[in-house]
Length: 279
Image (cartoon, rainbow, N blue to C red):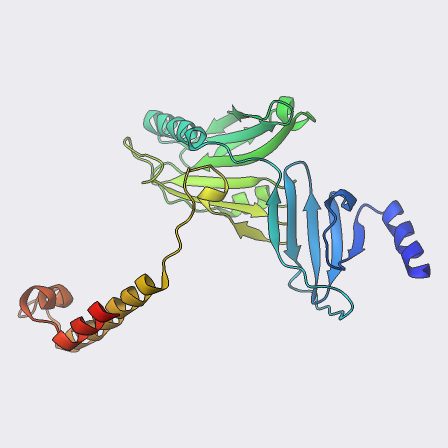
């Protein structure tokens, strides 16, 4: 067909590959940067040795009933490292924080042939508010390594991505990004604050900790009967809170914690408790 030949010529000459989604994403057929037209939108698809990201262009309206639906997605070709790798990174963050209340940046690289992970403390100048670094060309310019994760600390502050992080972490080859905060001398991986994300070519996508590190367990889905009991407890508690907070509130006559006062001094509605127990 003429359109197929014209599209082939465009793809051979351009830096961006243009495709139409007919039901299967052929990864070998992808270039680094791809524009894919689907049934109800246009998508940017990035492919590298790290994996594939699929992100919909929200500001482009497009429909084509002859094509198939495509959804946002993240596919990593790299197996997750063990949780012990993260605990080692956390100890680095704690050490620098204890010495000078400063941030630190660590890059995690994956050796494709050996299937091993390597921590790299890049050349950097650290301070309380930033970690200004340079990438190590030994890893970044090598075809043997994949940058899997770039993670930095926020010492005792909250784990939030700054506007500088937003600028640094988009328009790059796909990899995970992380920030760790609320550090203390006794911090362990389960009591710190951390956030993770990836740039999918159109926006930042939030990633779960367990999707980056092998924590040894899978996410637990609550059973329907447990959810029903929890909803009943929540509904009952909200109704009781409304009753208590409808009274005059002052620091003189009434407790500053009216709901707590109710739980300690009053008997809750027995009919409600029977309902919760029987859900």
